[in-house]
Length: 620
Image 1 (cartoon, helix red, strand yellow):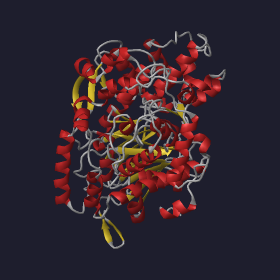
Image 2 (cartoon, helix red, strand yellow; image 1 turned 135 degrees about the vertical axis):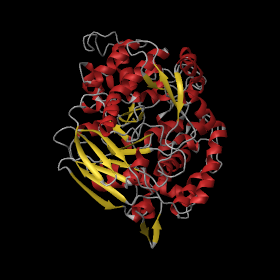
Image 3 (cartoon, one colour; image 1 turned 180 degrees about the vertical axis):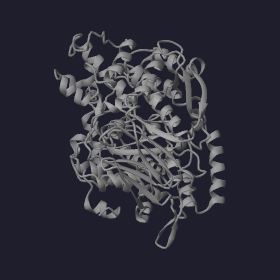
Image 4 (tube, helix red, strand yellow; image 1 turned 45 degrees about the vertical axis):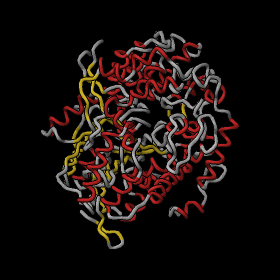
């Protein structure tokens, strides 16, 4: 379907939004609002706007009142390479806005079925899965797959539908058991990993969603888009940053992270772990673990690495090649350097449906509490919960997934777990706004600290990555360069990164496609698909608009300046080793950056968007 906007055809969109009420087992379809499309583009923009408008304040994220939104962008389902998928809701982990990207063809298939977004409300009275087959939407009984792993669920649903090309997203036992950092899994080895979307699906008794479509997406200037897509594909193959990602994946960051003292050894007690570098680096994984490369939907980069477990109780099982973040949190932060042990831990998280970042974060937190005497051996069910004990890591993953013993407390995430444990445990809970921080340190990278503090969903590296400017030495979009340990221009750096990655997210474009490539490719592709004339400045303004409506959502949920902060460890404990030994992010420096950031954003001193800024962005 093609809509219109101001008398013009709405190219690049399927033209409809599908609304599903699980409680009433009812389905409705509404036209995609052309103004929504022009102002918010799609993807992250659609998720943000729909959640802002549909969710009342202060609802329990695990109640039927929460809304789950899967959204596409105008580039999804076209010939443009490197598009992904996005899902959003109110997070059960942070109690604020969440969205999470994932790979695979789900979004493209949803558009082929005729929908730009899928909005799910209510709670089913029994386990179900959705079967979307073009205009047909069925509520199918899922009682026989409730309790099954993500691997098993994916296979069973496809077999039942008799079509291996059907796109499926699902949850595992962790989502069913409302683990607050449970994932939504797609194509078995890809996840919407962060913030607990799997728990939201579980709370709705929604085990899976399958979709098949037969439609097409009409674009405004196909021949020009094809030419640009071919050029961009060649750039992705040849640009050093994207080429490295294609050949070696994110584990290629391992030596850099250790050499620059950036990764989380023993729950961030240090940021150097020399013994782990050779064990976890991409070249070792390539030799000992990987068996093939895979690409995302319509992409030429093949950055996904597929491995096979060689040791332990699940020898021969396929495991997604171990990403840098999983290396950092599920391996380094837990204090061990053993590729086989980490591969098995990675497999267990994927199998049960757990975020490897948050899982590693809560386990490392528990290990530090155990070593400091805050948790006793009795508290943890007799486990020897010391750093380096990967067998304890494996056991805890299962306990967390099924909420058994100490796993029931850890399934709440580090913030809630620390509050329940007490006895000073809060100091060792490394998170921002309840979201466990990823594997990039801020002591020695102050801009990254400001980034974590101000990100829309809590501690996150995917909504801006200042490290590539302050540590790797790249120039900002306007040519500005920054010094690593200085706070000068870090607020500007963070704002620009956030605005660009948010605009990028409205296209649901993979992060890796922007490293070392020109921003012009993205807003030009958007222009060619839609027929709109969009330049760099407007592209950035779109990102700023979406960022601000999310901030409005979070302010409504109670977020203020006091929440825009980083863990005490990063401010009070200097680094004990590495090239920036002795450095920490001081409170004084942090507040200076935050003040400047608020000013650049047009927010007041408490971090609330001013009416003037909202009017400027068309949000009032």
